[in-house]
Image (cartoon, rainbow, N blue to C red; front, side, top):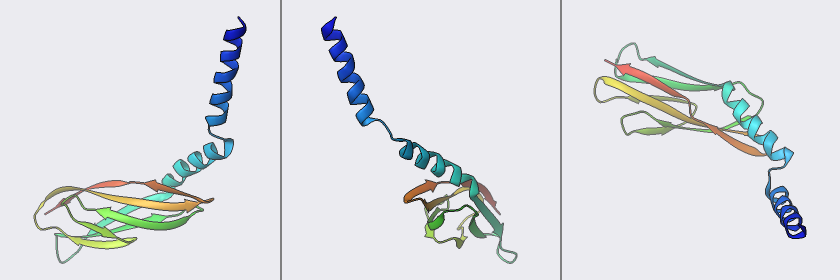
Length: 118
């Protein structure tokens, strides 16, 4: 019985020392919450149907650090507002990897948008 109690105390000590602190949990929750403040916008250029205008809007309390784009055709870009010309008509999935810094932690969310290019 004494060995079992000693083992349980040892296991509890290891688990407690390696568990997340309340601060870590709060950072994770804050990071997930910040993703709801990220909005992805797109519009087709009026004169060129293969030219797509993309932008990211962030309205949270952190600081927008950067945006990396993938346009679904193998091309990439960076910045909060970008344009991309598709080589061929089709349906593409555009993604914006949005990084926000809040309370000393960086959070990344990846909103997606399916676009049809004529």
